[in-house]
Image (cartoon, rainbow, N blue to C red; front, side):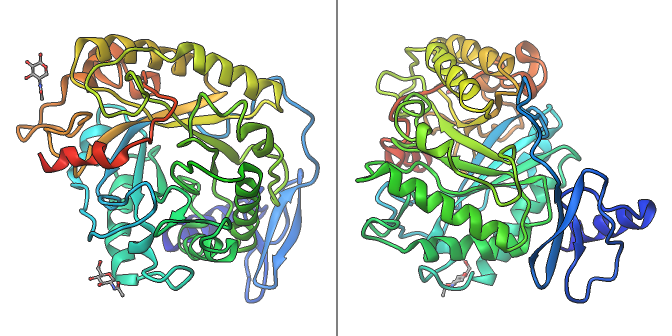
Length: 406
Ligand SMILES: *[C@@H]1O[C@H](CO)[C@@H](O)[C@H](O)[C@H]1NC(C)=O
Ligand SMILES: *[C@@H]1O[C@H](CO)[C@@H](O)[C@H](O)[C@H]1NC(C)=O
């Protein structure tokens, strides 16, 4: 919060007019309170008032692209040994900080940094472990500092579960789910380059509408905590891009943002390219273009909404180089409806992992990173990358992550 507050003060002092979504009042607040012409100072709580848009803009012909086009990579490690039932038995591994400058110098401007819920709050609904947070935050800051346009997704990587039980469907309460996010909102809530990934890959949910209510609960809690960040809202079936238009999408498009409008609510989708869409095989069998076209059409027809492909990837094979390149070309061409992508995965994975994008010890890149068009010669800048997908992409994250032990 420190870093962003400093820039807010500077901006307010220069113009004397407070920009939309910035603070304009609250107990102890002594900076300018006059909002920009198109917004109104609105009390969120006694400590925090904020300039909110005075009217919801009429439906634009294209989504508001207030997020720049994003492309980059997942840097895994703090999520290692979270299983798909939301259990966790590890200590996490820090992604090497050098990767952020490595990838951002090639044009990457998005890093997704997964973490285990149990590492951040050892007791469900309890306080953040500040020792762990300091470690995690060091990684987040290394990513942010690697480039002025770099965005970071902080990704709660728990499959809508804690130790085998589903949020609000036999497991943690919505309030316990909200607790971690209001605490993270207090830490990161003023930095628009930090995107909140509310939950990785919910799956096998007894009730999708109940899950969407949990999502709404957390969105409200984050805003009441004063955070204005972009939020990634996950659907069902491991955040499947394919299932989205028919499963969770019709409910998720109704989630509202206390800030007004919906342009800060981005849908989180995943898609791999292997035969069972699990992201566990080296060979790719689909380019996912039909799936993504259907998704784009759904998003356009339901309020011109936006989605981000936060996981896709393939193995070091000719089929993946070709099909990923086709997928990423489509993703790039579908901006701003598709905001961008982050490939799975680099970070603490070793270079034997089947989907590895971790640079080799000599600093050279995996062939796929270059040849699929993530970045580099064929793809140009990352903001013009390709992807991979699967309908049950998260089906077996455990076996995906086993590769690191190879
Ligand atoms: C807090 O985090 C540190 C560092 O990850 C860890 O050593 C410690 O055991 C954690 N505390 C609890 C209560 O889990
Ligand atoms: C990737 O595949 C190429 C061609 O088959 C091979 O030469 C190279 O060693 C592979 N790289 C890795 C990291 O497996």
